[in-house]
Length: 164
Image 1 (cartoon, rainbow, N blue to C red):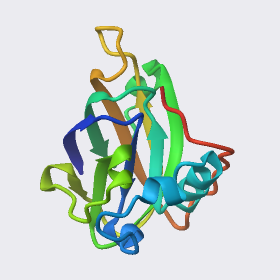
Image 2 (image 1 turned 180 degrees about the horizontal axis):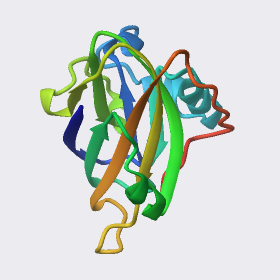
Image 3 (image 1 turned 90 degrees about the horizontal axis):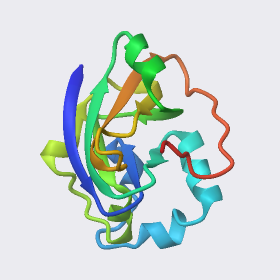
């Protein structure tokens, strides 16, 4: 699997999840204020792998490259920013959204923001660098490597996972 997602964000972060993980969020609900505004709540989601998230440091236009298989070692080593996350995938789909979508939730994820991924647990290596313009979020490429694991990877986050 190697899929590109073009994602414009107003918020300072990106979320990704399988639809089962957000099934309890009501249409129009402000889930952000209720359950995602406190850094400890965000860390809990990140460690559970239900709604994976990371802070980009800026809104903007991002090209997400989601892939599995072998980690691209040279690109990973050269990247300025690197974090590890986890995700439980169910239903063969993973959605990528602007963090601020959680403020007025719309259940349907646009088709252009979905990738196919086999069900299971994943360690997700996220990495990027400042774009040529020197401005975070200015057509910035972010790589997400999905590595299948036998069980949910154990992570420790005390707050919001910071990529940039």
